Image 1: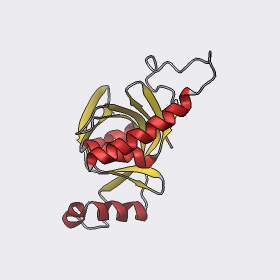
Image 2: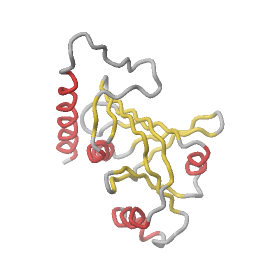
Image 3: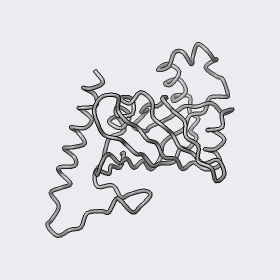
Image 4: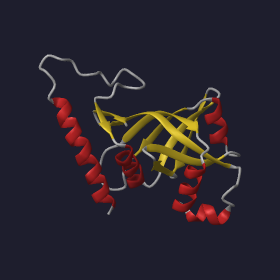
Amino acid sequence: MMAVVLTTCLISCSQKEAQQENVEEGQEQADTTTSATPKANATMSPEDFVAYLESCGKYFLATMDGDQPRVRPFSFCDVINGEVYFMTRKYKDVYKQLVKNPKVQIAAFPNEGRGWMRITCKLVEAENPEVRTHFLDKYPSMKEAHPVDDPDYAFMKLVGITAVVGKNVYSVK
């Protein structure tokens, strides 16, 4: 099943990439090797983006703690009303780091297949009852362990997502 989701995602992205290749001859492509956040040359839907992350099982989120990078595995994300959200807990160091500096990078590799995805974006807190209910319904173990109105839950919206897969650079919209 995961292979089907990943294949669908990559086919969709490849079709969009092929459209981008029909650029007038002589027009230069963006150099994706020199910028921390390369310029996107194609788009990826939020649903395809989350399907790719979910095909990885776990992916790794990097934050800054002062001048020290911190990396940890993550696995709670979803699309709600066309936007991508993560969930964490407010008492965790990751939350405290995101409040100080919302810029992150994420590295993901699918369990089946090939194609590292490197993601650059900001995570912005977005407390919303609909988002809270959605996440707790999607992850019943969280709902069983803590009350729905637990103030320690933090829901973070991903903003300005740029995803790099191989030589392809996507803007998630």
